[in-house]
Length: 196
Image 1 (cartoon, rainbow, N blue to C red):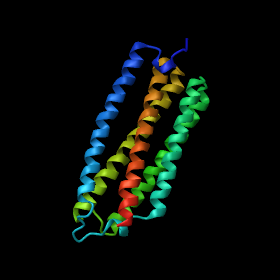
Image 2 (image 1 turned 90 degrees about the vertical axis):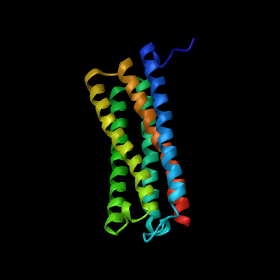
Image 3 (image 1 turned 180 degrees about the vertical axis):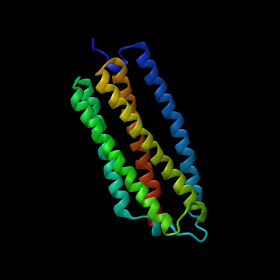
């Protein structure tokens, strides 16, 4: 008989992981509403810039590469957790957090450049929906970095246990979810918006 991974080894762990999947469904609903709002409003530019004049392909492509790479490093962290290799697990989680911080930094730079150029939320319905959608994703990534930091501290103090392994697994799920959301953002907001 195949043994359950450590994060599922207790009834409490399995229940909490199920609860987190439920949370991800509700978070998906939040992003679905933001995507729907953006889809309705992205042509309403008023006197502000159009999406095609605002988006820099190099910037959002680099952000995409960084975030997708961080998803890969997060998966390696989970792999190392399953091998009970605490030091490698911590290293890969830290690399994931650094990539996430680089992504957030690039996004803040993009938003600042846009705002200094006059593209603010109050300028048009498009900009309001754009900043809300992309900013909400950026806040989620920022929260994920803080959360991973807390988990790394617990790993350093307690090692790999059923509780810490569950937390590593759940933060990994969260991180992969954010990457999936970004793939939709990249496609719907940047690629399609950049072609108009």
